[in-house]
Image 1 (cartoon, rainbow, N blue to C red):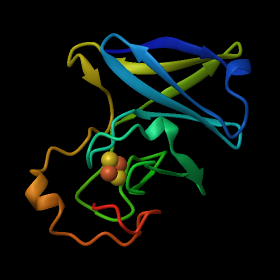
Image 2: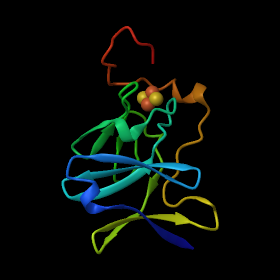
Image 3: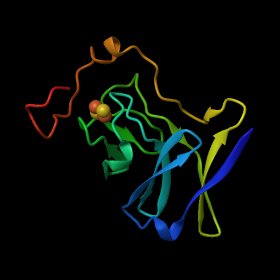
Image 4: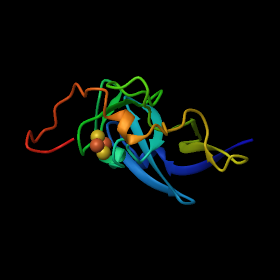
Length: 137
Ligand code: FES
């Protein structure tokens, strides 16, 4: 059963902004992208970077750590089709933003972050370059 929990008021999240909220023990990154709200797990599947601190370009959040990219709507990685970040359903009612959780599973509803072993993840080349070329991926 999906339970929607209020996480923010819409006035707290202007267009182009993101916020990180804590629900239970889960950090959720909530975005207002062109008046549409999205929620993803605030944990990059690469090395746990805070996706809520990443910039958004064309509906894609760019992880601030190594620039891996995930579509806000689906969580799909732009670089690795095997990987995705967790996404949550979002509803807006009476100027309040709600995020949905699956109570039975006690974890995110919808797509879940990939659990591929790290060794497998890194066999697929990354297209995007980090901002700092000295930084290791
Ligand atoms: S932690 Fe997100 S790209 Fe590395």
